[in-house]
Image: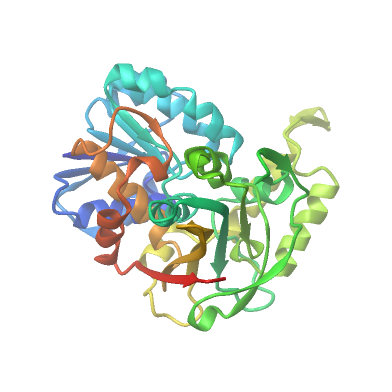
Length: 389
């Protein structure tokens, strides 16, 4: 099978490329990006005969379709607001599709393409990263074993960096949106918009992660899990994270910029030139995002590296008795699941293991074999079951 990774020179895309290269079921991997310097550096590091590099501009629709026609499946590792554009190209090329998430509102728009994907005989799985992605599959494991579900609580615990670290953990545009847009939660049968960075709670994570302060953030899991398991009576679903794995100080700095309007996409006139404050802010932040090459080549056990645990805490009943599943996916290299899950999803789709249409992760994959496959990459899932609450 042949798989193309759009944005393969990016932080998460590079990890997807690496996973596909070492996957024996994959015959060829096409790393496609506008950053050819970064792409060539990653290709040189991986040094695989299965890997080819090509330039891809998402604004050139015809060229994008031609590229996708060469592939059995596409991993879209570019920023989330390109998702619909790439999905349209995949429809035309009849190529399976997966991405890293649509930030709730985008996911809802993507799901509307399901009938068209089904008619084309191809599949799409939305939000296949460490989060969303992993929490959806973990929640499905628990849901399959519960008669009813009261709450699905998702916690993304990231090892905090040393105080004063001026680094972003992933794409600055996405973090700015997660930091400033209102998080959506599901409560008692309806979706509710809350204020950013509210409803703090201290949550215990595995090992050295310890207790971390978790707050609400806009995310795609909440858009699909209550709907997928509506027949089990879900009453609550939310997503929380601890400052997106960044130093609290840098988060507060970005919030101040947002208060002054620096997150606005609307152009303003500056000395006769039209400038988008958001584009300016993102450009200025570029030097504070670690390179994909550095992330790919950093050993997992290096001190200070970004470890994380994704937790789906699912409360429900079995035979009328309360049962709680705590599903935790732990890795010492924090970005590993974000790149590995979409890579594995693409391989499964290319092998015909996912039905045509557009699906959330929890409805696309059988959890047990999928999680077992992730274990081979050092991504462990730990399950605890509490009864008689």
